[in-house]
View 1 (cartoon, rainbow, N blue to C red):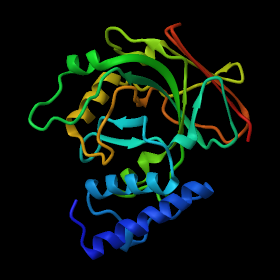
View 2: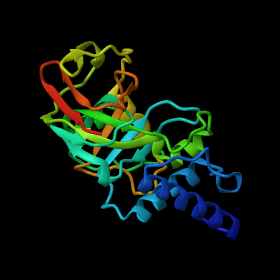
View 3: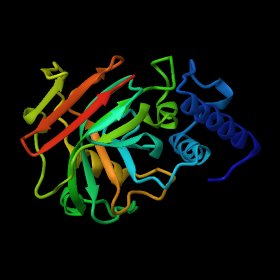
View 4: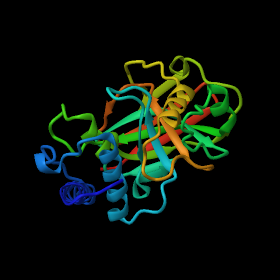
Length: 252
């Protein structure tokens, strides 16, 4: 990525502001105009710089979005906000119930040689239920996609359920989801995600500045349940097809 003085200043300012928001748990109206990324590549570079400023370990957890105004996207999940079920977390704004896939082999971007769905399924070793913890650093909702990428697609952490060996495929997973809050069924808007499709779409698009997905990485693949606001203490649990389960106690 070639950097001139103006681009370097823009990336430096945006990265510093976003890193400070994450440290403090705060938010901005949005980035000032002179600090806003002008391309998806700049958004991905800001992700990398924020991760470095936070001093996190190498990225091993990701989120993907299959669809967007400019195609499939990804974002790293910062290590300080990754938890294992049964988890206890103090601060949660909102959560989404997702299926996470773990890779058994690398899936580097292959320019001109796209992966098939079968290629991607063969690379998955385990799967698990996951709660994505969600919070935007922007108070303005309608920011450009480049700013959403810079903010890691509003990711604020991850709770990972018990892993199970993966075989086959996952079709229409929302039909087998049960979501509970404090022991009571929690209503949600069903979203029939395609975990393998989401992963395939991104590895064929590429763009991240961390070197792509590696063996052992976990990737969350889209919400089955929409967004659940979770500002109050409580116990959240979910089961999928009597094979996957997850538990999160919110204490704050």
